[in-house]
Image (cartoon, rainbow, N blue to C red; front, side, top):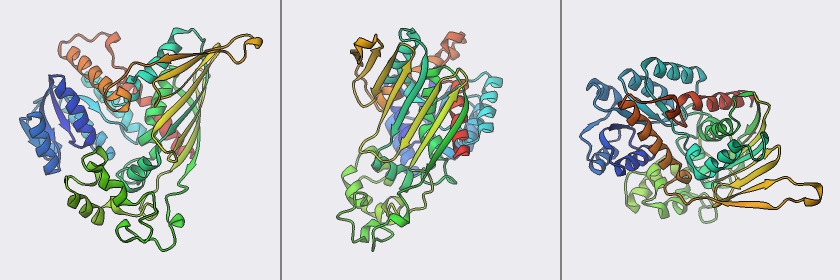
Length: 404
């Protein structure tokens, strides 16, 4: 199997690394950034490299599939171009901020008999997979309602959605679509249903100029509050040299490179004085076609990145935090047994990011594309995250944003 990587940023190289380790040939890379392109060529023994997707497709079909890990606003155009060139796709989310474009990609893939597997990696985690297994077993009856929360972490909020590449809706996509399409996808998967009604509220409450400390400046480098502000750029990013978030700030590897990037680039700006307009908190209520209801909270105000869920069924409930190594199952008893004794279910250890989901989706992608190349893909071999399934989450997110 031969794979092309479209976009050699953090997500693209994560998938490339996992595939490369599994013996997949990474034969081409498309990346406008010269340094990132050269690094990818060297790291994965890549034969072909291009600075634009137009130059890539001119060469004809030189790979079996492509990983699309480019900026949000380019996903649709890049995916459509690659489909028309005959490539199966592993497509980063969001598919598109337009529901109509999501449908167009799905139909194009069906028309050309090509796969699009969307990077909804949470479906592949041990945490959510175990919850799904319990639900599908029927041992605690059907789902009635779900309580679910995504805690983004205050630093991740500041890094990605205040200073970073997803800060402004006009340049990327609404935060609910960009970040929480994962969670809407999980809700669709667990309930095995489409949504029928959505309502949502949310706003940008904190990361705005009205909350800036008196006397603060446009950039952290000359701010009198730098020694006390928890979002000071130098104290935040200098210790991160060599880690994945630092790659967003600079392609360089030295302290000098980082200081220069913070003095001139977007990540050195005061978090209260950026051009961000996306929500820092949002809630949604969802009713599914099968009658299940769900309440969802997304918040940028937490000390770490994690998710909590409670699935309440007819005969019991399942509760868990994806930062733990276990989930809790309770089967309801008679009145004199309240509260019922919990069953703690230990989860298998995992490797990789996103709770092991990145590895899981790469395995699924390799399995599906290998089968397709052998012309042997019965219906039961469909991907857990095929676009036909993943598309529903985008409809919910777009409806939530319209409601908000």
